[in-house]
Figure 1 (cartoon, rainbow, N blue to C red):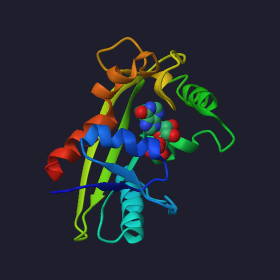
Figure 2 (cartoon, rainbow, N blue to C red):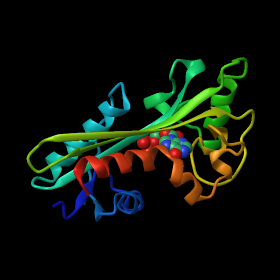
Figure 3 (cartoon, helix red, strand yellow):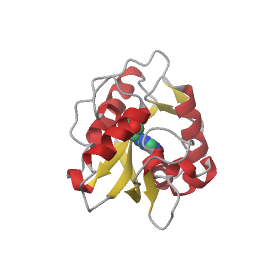
Length: 189
Ligand code: IMP
């Protein structure tokens, strides 16, 4: 029986969102000291954060997540570099513009959001789960909801971008929701 899980983040909002998705209490780690995320995959980076969280919170269940967007025409980039694509000085609007410019001449506009969750138990055993939201890149940003690349990803089977979906509509199909449901099953929550 898992009574509570600590999320390797200092962000209480992220912990509250994961608590809703997992159906179990999730708290941010107090005094969270983030490690350098230098892995080459979402799993690597989630694991780096989960291991750091476990080291900072002995005896606890710890979960960490990593997520981003993969674009087929860019061979899977920006991937783990999603938060920094186009350079450090850009905001979300600048980053989406940079990504659209990078695929301006590409015929293949397929892309996906991915999320990997890594959980480590008090016994040190690791568990992981992942989720994907398949879609294609819009020609121009649309919608003011969500964050990051939401205004330019159109989920498969839809005509609206994630930025035009309500929070409930996006949660029902999102990579983060799918990863959380998979982890809930793996951990028997
Ligand atoms: P992180 O996992 O919070 O570090 O997110 C990495 C980056 O991926 C974010 O800064 C966003 O740019 C992008 N990203 C991850 N998930 C989403 C999403 O659900 N919508 C839009 N962008 C996302």
